[in-house]
Length: 202
Image (tube, rainbow, N blue to C red; front, side, top):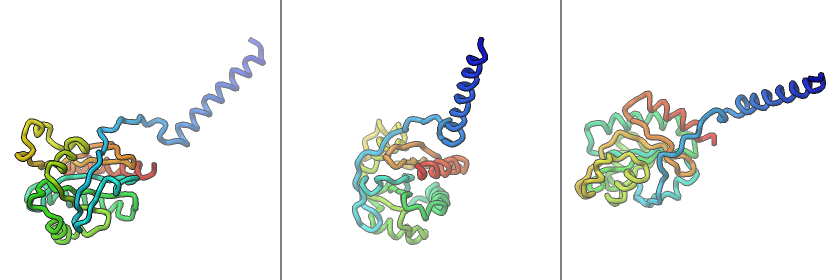
């Protein structure tokens, strides 16, 4: 092999290494495998704690966490909401971040009741939204959009169902559910916070 041929082989080898270095070092997401979305958010229309209509158009272009609770809950809900408060505190100044807390007991949790609950818990924050509406619409969102409802509910008439889940759904700016997290496990909440940071940068 001639010296000239060896030069060109060496030159292109260095070029390939340099190109790979640029991709992996200067473009951090190159090495990260893109995980397909868990689901995607279908159109919705609910009522917030101020009695105003809140639809999927209000979350367009925003990263948000969706969960379900009910105001009379004495079990996991208070702890979940305290954990969610910590998430809120980290992102309260992010204009493109929201928290949507849906009631699983709309017969009790009217907009006025949600407002009283939010006020009593100190949750009067502009980017933490409490939602009520038709039971079938709320439950179908949990099941088909956020995929945080118990699959066994599919076998039960919706009038007899009751959602009591500790799962949170994280949604990106394009309306894709990127992950499901346990709102009672600090390790999963920490993972979600890191993912929120990443999604907000996109």
